[in-house]
Amino acid sequence: MSDSKKPRRDFIKLSAMTLGGVGAASLLVPFISSMNPGKDTLALASTEIDLSPLEEGQSLTVIWRGKPVFIKHRTKSEIDSARNISLEELPDAEEDSARVQKDNWLVVLGVCTHLGCVPLGQKASDTKGDYGGWFCPCHGSHYDTSGRIRKGPAPTNLPVPPYVFLTDNRIKIG
Amino acid sequence: MSSNELQGYKKTLTSPYTGIKGWIDSRLPLIRMMEAEYLKFPVPKSLNYFWSFGGIAMFCLIGLILTGIFLGFHYKPSADDAFDSVERIMRDVSFGWLIRYLHANLVSFFFIATFIHIFRALYFGSYKAPRELVYIFGLTMFMLMMATAFLGYTLPWGQMSYWGATVITNLFSAIPVVGDAILTLLLGDFTVGDSAVNRFYVLHWLLAFAIVGLVVFHVITLHMTGSNNPTGTEPQSWDETVSFHPYVTIKDLNATIFFFIILAFILFYYPNILGHSDNYIKANPMVTPAHIVPEWYFLPFYAILRAIPDKLGGVIAMFSSILALGLLPWLDTSKVRSCLFRPIWRYCVLLFAVNFLVLMYVGGKPAEGLYVLISRIGTAYWFLFIFVLAPLVGFLETPRQPLTITNYLQSKKA
Image (cartoon, rainbow over all chains, first blue to last red):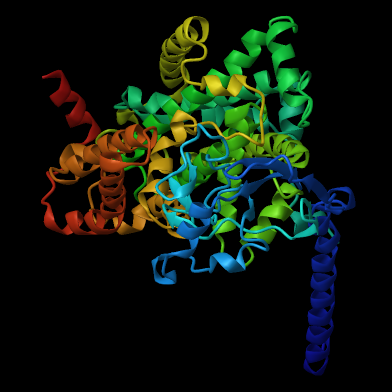
């Protein structure tokens, strides 16, 4: 083969390899994508909850997307303790008013943001941690009455799921 | 093209054997390879019983695969059926209890053998040149072993299975920005559930055989360099070696039988002592058990995870504790391999082993008070050992002149 042909050969080799590589890489897409939740899982069945049986101070756990959601009918003192605090004291600063739609109803995902355990505090007999909200038994995270992280390894507050009040006593999560 | 040009490339079908053996061996040269590598293979004659734990671990792996196949005939990987199918194995399947208890306890003994095997490598300097790759393949297998054991532990779908799976998979959510998306991708759902147990089952099988593949690499690299021995000096003559068979085969068999007698004692008298009673409660995604602990063999690493008061930091510390061990062949600056002749490093290694047990202890305790402090000191020593002591001690200490294998054996007799 003469030298003048070599760059041409190199070019063909390189483009063939590049195209082959792109082809192989795009073949990965359907396989990786197939690992995601299927349509049945994604069809996030929204959950409707009747709040009327919940007295002040009581809590309810409902299931949404396979995860527990904590609904808390907060007392006056619980609301006050969540509000009378400076944001600088919070590891993940967030106003209580930004986390609720109605002051006396708190709706948060009951999944510890550390490693996914379900915190204690829903039952009257449960330990509620140092801040009167929830306490995660796995690695000792304390949440306050707004579901905000106050102490322990969890990095963020308990997230608020999307929900709407259908009537004064009915909400729809999802 | 004459056939002469192909000489050196084309194989000729010859064999040192005759008859059927020769016919097969000339076409599939496995027989002569096995003879060279397992019958006549020379090993230093100064090996002690620490050198039997590689073989013991291999027998554990074989046992796990065999029992695993038979469990697989009855197990159903779904959130609804998994727990009940395991209970069916325990109660209704003929000898199912034996096969499952064997599988569950063999894992623990696999880890015991592997921990001792790794300690042996550290104490006698088996990780040092030219055996770096033997050691790296070993550590890789150890990590796959932990992944496989974790996946297997989730399969019975009890409370500990479920919440262990939740906590461990949530480690991925520590990855900044994309963590949650990756977690959802891996689980195929927003929580550990039906989709996850199906995947875990497939991966549990896949990784088990990946370990078998790595055993082959571990052994190939080992047979290139030959075994290390307590002196850390290479054999100088045939006189200082014995053949693998019958000397090592019989000795390893002896050690394996003794080891399996202890396993049998646990298996038949205390089959649940290494497990957790909460795992006999079916998984409940709404209730987390009060005290989650991983299996005992994960506890040192769990202690390191919890020692760091930051989610991402803890995860990084835990994974790098093992990865960092892989750097030891290059961080250890000493010319001498064996701790028998290294007056300072010897105590560093022994303290590392004690530290490992201390971390194991605090890993099983609640993360509070003194336990947190101890786990932090333990974690600090782990990394100090690898990154500071290994390079430094090699310079500071004056090792004794290592004995040759012959002199070592004479000095032991005297």
